[in-house]
Image (tube, rainbow over all chains, first blue to last red; front, side, top):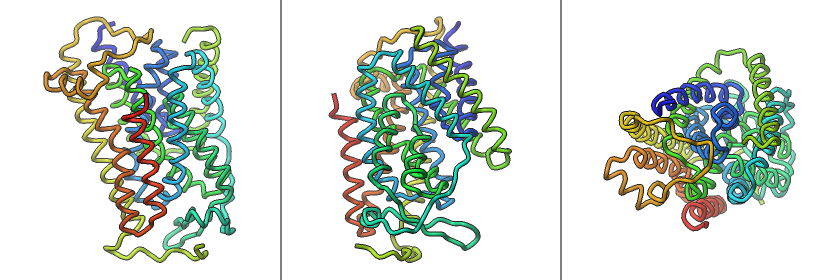
Length: 278
Length: 135
């Protein structure tokens, strides 16, 4: 295949991956890595390099839209970024040491879990119960519940949330993804923050977390510019279109369909890794 | 220990979380668009100049030093090397979340929230360590 054609096909595929990532709420990285490795037979190190860059682009690109809604909590985000950036350092370091097939298996498992998390019904468990550590760290806020109406919340179980965030950061650095699914679990399940606050704050955190692995990826030579440019531009375009469509689409049905695609990709990645094809 | 009351509504013109976030949101969007623009220019140059078969990415070899070190990238950009221009765009992109943390430090400082100015400072230190010092 000619180099220009390869770039254009990659661009088109990446637009689709970005669209899928935005509509399923999983993020572009979780989709683009299996697509690059399984379909285009790209080595997983180049794939996660391209993915990490796309993840930074979508996180920063979507930020302006989230800010307007008034759900994200910068203190919660900033405090937990200590955990995710330290985790990302560890993860990126592991990527340079762990064999490719092991990365592939972990990736497959994360895909399966993300698919499950994207269709699972979530229960709101947020509370105003005063938690001493959370109050000392100002991990609380209020979010809009309707026109002119606000509801207060206080974070719970801060150490559990912080530890889960370190895991999310490690996975992000190891796999070149935003690991939004794990970040949301840490905030929404462990710390009992409102779901909308968790998802929007997670989006903000993804860019900073990914930036913590970017330097290590760059120096390790994972970021191949000719591969990255169609992927980054495509995923960014796809996710921007996706977030516009999301307002009107019937999300529940879409999520189920996409979850099945993700499951297929996850199984394929695990099988390929075990057979040593990656 | 702080009391369990909601923070007062942000005063127009005063420093508030919402104001920091709006400011940060605009910066992030501008940074991404600038980065995407530079990457697009590099990408178009790459497509114009590339006539060979598709590059082989099936085996990992790592990228040449000229595309990894700042000096090498700057050199390549001056010579209008397409891949170096793409790298420049990616560096701008990686810098946007770092700039976000810097803006939060400034914002928290003016909000007189010392705790969070320090928390943001720790995050910035980790980022700078990973970008420049980590081997």
